[in-house]
Amino acid sequence: MELVIELEDRFNKLLNKISELKEENQRLREEVEAEKETRCDIESRINTLLEKIRNELD
Image (cartoon, rainbow, N blue to C red; front, side):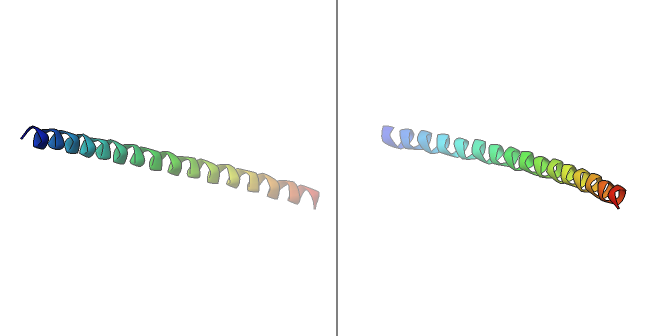
Protein backbone atom coordinates (compact mmCIF):
# COMPACT_ATOMS: atom_id res chain seq x y z
CA MET A 1 0.00 0.00 0.00
CA GLU A 2 2.87 2.33 0.77
CA LEU A 3 4.18 1.79 -2.75
CA VAL A 4 0.85 2.88 -4.22
CA ILE A 5 0.90 6.07 -2.15
CA GLU A 6 4.45 6.80 -3.28
CA LEU A 7 3.53 6.20 -6.92
CA GLU A 8 0.49 8.45 -6.60
CA ASP A 9 2.67 11.17 -5.11
CA ARG A 10 5.22 10.90 -7.90
CA PHE A 11 2.44 10.92 -10.48
CA ASN A 12 0.93 14.06 -8.97
CA LYS A 13 4.34 15.73 -8.98
CA LEU A 14 4.72 14.87 -12.65
CA LEU A 15 1.30 16.31 -13.42
CA ASN A 16 2.25 19.51 -11.61
CA LYS A 17 5.51 19.71 -13.55
CA ILE A 18 3.62 19.24 -16.81
CA SER A 19 1.30 22.07 -15.84
CA GLU A 20 4.25 24.34 -15.00
CA LEU A 21 5.91 23.53 -18.31
CA LYS A 22 2.72 24.28 -20.23
CA GLU A 23 2.50 27.67 -18.53
CA GLU A 24 6.14 28.42 -19.29
CA ASN A 25 5.66 27.31 -22.88
CA GLN A 26 2.71 29.68 -23.26
CA ARG A 27 4.71 32.55 -21.75
CA LEU A 28 7.60 31.85 -24.12
CA ARG A 29 5.28 31.70 -27.13
CA GLU A 30 3.86 35.09 -26.18
CA GLU A 31 7.37 36.47 -25.77
CA VAL A 32 8.41 35.15 -29.19
CA GLU A 33 5.30 36.66 -30.77
CA ALA A 34 6.06 40.05 -29.21
CA GLU A 35 9.63 39.85 -30.52
CA LYS A 36 8.35 39.01 -34.00
CA GLU A 37 6.07 42.04 -33.94
CA THR A 38 8.95 44.26 -32.82
CA ARG A 39 11.14 42.88 -35.60
CA CYS A 40 8.44 43.51 -38.19
CA ASP A 41 8.02 47.09 -36.95
CA ILE A 42 11.76 47.71 -37.17
CA GLU A 43 11.97 46.19 -40.65
CA SER A 44 9.10 48.37 -41.77
CA ARG A 45 10.81 51.50 -40.44
CA ILE A 46 14.06 50.54 -42.16
CA ASN A 47 12.27 49.94 -45.45
CA THR A 48 10.52 53.30 -45.16
CA LEU A 49 13.84 55.05 -44.53
CA LEU A 50 15.49 53.22 -47.41
CA GLU A 51 12.68 54.27 -49.72
CA LYS A 52 13.04 57.90 -48.62
CA ILE A 53 16.79 57.72 -49.28
CA ARG A 54 16.23 56.21 -52.73
CA ASN A 55 13.74 58.94 -53.56
CA GLU A 56 16.21 61.60 -52.45
CA LEU A 57 18.93 60.09 -54.62
CA ASP A 58 16.72 60.02 -57.70
